[in-house]
Image (cartoon, rainbow, N blue to C red; front, side):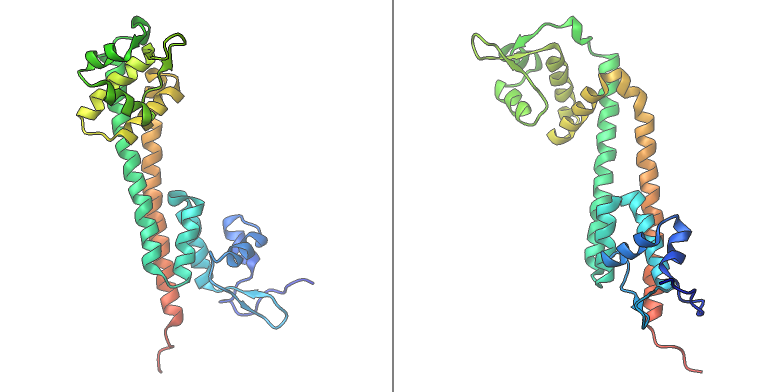
Length: 249
């Protein structure tokens, strides 16, 4: 059974909405089923009848994805379609808070890279040391180093003979970096994220080369959030207009 093109230009078929964005008609049906689009009216023979409001909703959802991701964008649209605007705004606020956290982490990483590449000795110039030596070097208590270990910042091994912690050259570097960032007011969870990125990149040098791309991605994400907000506002305006009574002649 093949659907005929609607005679009313204000009515759109799933394929009409899909074609604009390079989607399949089934994807549009799935979005409606999942609550990302508002419910569509059905014709007598069961075909979905979408309107410009649905087109605005689809525009909003796809624009939100670039800034907020699929899961959060789905939550935002479902909340809006339920009439729970505050819930949708809280989800948006949470995404902005995550972006701000990522920016702060990047700032910390840039500080770390400068410190690692310009002021600290290279790891191979250091020897492995016990906890007492490292604590004395940094001017902290051994309990502080154990706290940093629990936070995922340090990863000392154990001496097989004594069971005591032994800090490798990389651990010493990470402890010195953590001490520096703590003095700069950074939280332990931020520092743990910084060091994870240093390790994943294979050291400060490779990480430094990627910082520009990382900042560009954050900028693009922030700009995408602005675009998503604009498309969502257009959808809300269209939804409000569709529910208003027609003007009297």
